Length: 185
Image (cartoon, rainbow, N blue to C red; front, side):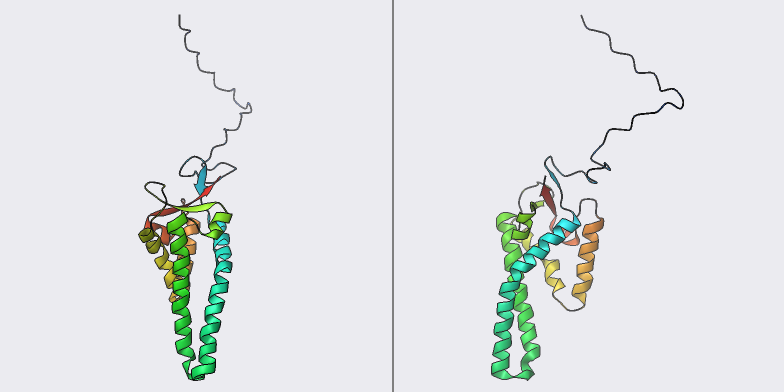
């Protein structure tokens, strides 16, 4: 025989203290945004910025070597008249180094070394799966523009602001490539 359902609790008396609502993910005190899946959260602006700084440190060595090589060739070869061309070559080679680094790591592992250290990874929005090389290249394109004088600063600010204010922390580059950055909890 089944027991009858319990009647609802009576409403609290006027002025009686009420228990606070249970904490929730959305708007709760521990984490501001619900993640896309159990065990992961959206990769926030600051943790992603730290990952990019770490990646920048990894890229510093090859870029310094290339810059020194091109600068030395101009200095000891053609002279001061070729400095404009040398800067253009350094920019092009720097772009290629960045593209190889970011596109290569995103396509092969879904994360760069800086992202690995902070438990971040890039995934497809629709499936949550790792991205392929063409998606990684599309995601990199706004970063390539950052290397250009003047317009690069505007694009960098747009990427930063869009990442910081979006509920899912998707920057312009993420929307363009239909990707998310997630952090393993």
